[in-house]
Image (cartoon, rainbow, N blue to C red; front, side):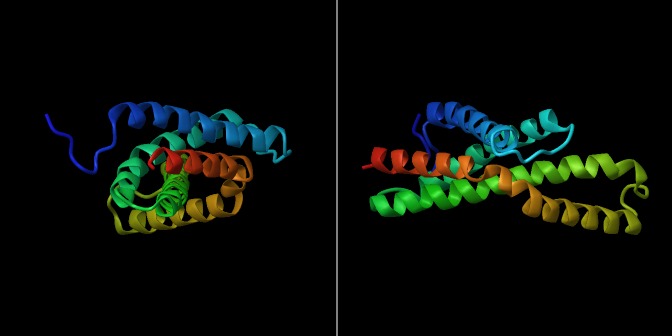
Length: 160
């Protein structure tokens, strides 16, 4: 059976997603406990959101990275890893945050598929994404960014 060109090796895909999920959870926990960025009483739930964002981010980004960096110079591979894995991880984490936010406010919203429900869904999601951009991304800095840079350099060297 031949592999598709855009499909990365399965072992890297699965083990990498688990490891990257743990890394993003560690980044959140370091941010809270070492850098003193307290979040309140929801640390366990937020840790799960960051871990899930890392896991989903890796699963989605790896095929894109594999496709975009095939037979490219090491500098392009490095840029692909930093850009794609970083953006997709932040997007996946923000998406999970927005889903949890929406779930919390759902019982106050209008009935499903009504016009008012549509407005409420749109604005609740927009507010959640804004709140994550303002308050949530800081938990990925500096530890998550450092992990991203180190991983990107290692993977760029590996691809030579």
